[in-house]
Image (cartoon, rainbow, N blue to C red; front, top):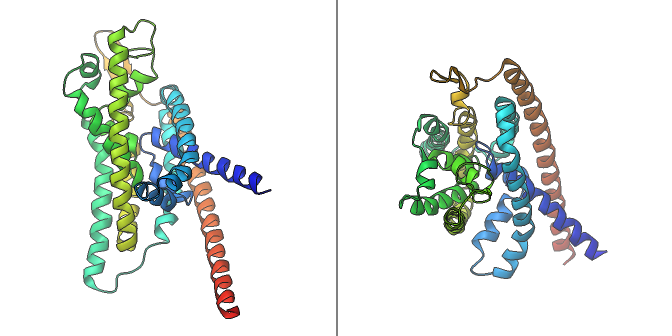
Length: 340
């Protein structure tokens, strides 16, 4: 019976990992926000921060999440290219709706400051984090650097950039409200990386026509990304654990700002922004980037409302259940104390 319970728990945590992996792979969707919604954020932060002192316990805690994350991320990355080509606004509207509906997660933690200094600190945390998350998408919309060519030509500064990209992506994944993949888009390496490891064109290391040099380059890029990601997870988890322990309310004001800002980034970024009007190629007399179809806007708006309502209902329900469990545990502890 106990073995069956452990297996069920492992599978449940693995499914949460799948959701985190999907969120991590999709620009504009925050794995940290999804972790908050799934009530596993604190568990993950504590486990990552405790690697040095309790390696075995942290490893076993993170294992199902890690396995699920890989499955979810690979599945999302395989489908994201085709999905965005067919209905970019529809997918964006769906994901944005889930983020918008998750607002009660941060909202429930907010408390009014007892003095002017606290209120000012809360406002600054909210405003600065909102501006930061929103600027991520806006920067990607204005970026015109071609990193695909730099990666294909193995320019020397691409190697430290891969290390830095892995660090930033992992760091932002831990922070609710900021998308790790969106930060890669800010750096300009999201689609070049996607094409390298999963694509069939460009410098894809798996393409039949790819030579040995490209394959070795792809392996080196992957190694640098992983090293950077591990460093980012370690630093960010320790930082977030400290902030939640010492400045919990202020931190959640910041998280709320990140959630609002991420909504802006989801609709204004380098992958979606050019498609609002499209890009006409004069030399070929055709669209190099097709404008978004009217039906795509309509379906995206409908799915935004549907996802927001569904997410809001689910979050409220899970929050109520969590509070009921906390109250039950509190009553049990009080009963045990009276018995002693």
